[in-house]
Length: 416
Image (spheres, rainbow, N blue to C red):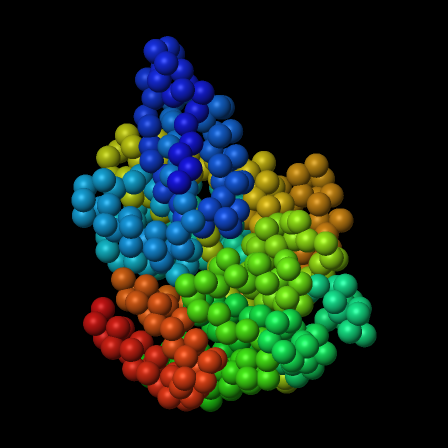
């Protein structure tokens, strides 16, 4: 676990008293390997730029679901952090438990900064009109392509697969059929990619009757497509427990030629590879237009003491300055929350001019990622990963597995 203290705090530890009294706040974040370094840099700059608030950042590599369970346990134990990093998959857990504090007043306290934000992206962090998370970044799916492997197989990385049939054909050409080199790996741990493909095919997580739609024809088609890829040894089936580390390893080692995952993995996936990497939008089922899910990554304020809330607000606002947004976009290939950052050449203007494919990724049609209320989403997402793995490995059929998932989803929703 990384703990971040400013030079003021270090001075205090060796006997030098701070010039001014500080409010030390504790901010917790998982997903260290997924862009944790840029988060450390943002709060280091914040700590060094003023002496009123001191951020103690606790950073480890737990998933957002595991981080949520840890923080909820901290709350029960009376050691509540002042803020916690979240994705859309867990935001409702904090809101519906009554722990998340509204941030509208915090954002309004910096009107110039607030006016620079993309309101559409900002709305993804609102629930029932209230801002419950300070945005850090918003990421969309992207197809990462080993361009060298494409060319060796007679494929053109400048004309990437746009449909399932094209994706399957490319995967077949890029696989060796022995199970040690695959053409494709699709995101698997939760419903992030599943929901986008479902929406693209005309399905929905919840039907007009309020009942789960995850066992409908569009969902069954999607799982059957993925199962066929695994059965034909064109894609590995990874459990949610190992996906995060193994997916990156397989792509970077050249054992998977195409990886459909979050664009926020851009820097980590492209670092230290010995091949050319191309990017493309998410392919969709033949005859349908792709609709992606926007995964919001931000911070929920849990502090309830007014003084600590003010200090936490100050720290969280540092995430959305033009400079911080530019650093975040460069590290995450995410959509720029601060419009001013995208317009300033030395921040992101020149960056986008040199990385035009990122503009294409960020212009994909998107919707907010669906989450069940309260703590139900954690249980649902965990069961989704397990059931999908059963389907992909042939332990259960797509229809039977999704029927179980739909029944669980309806039960969890009824329980809330």
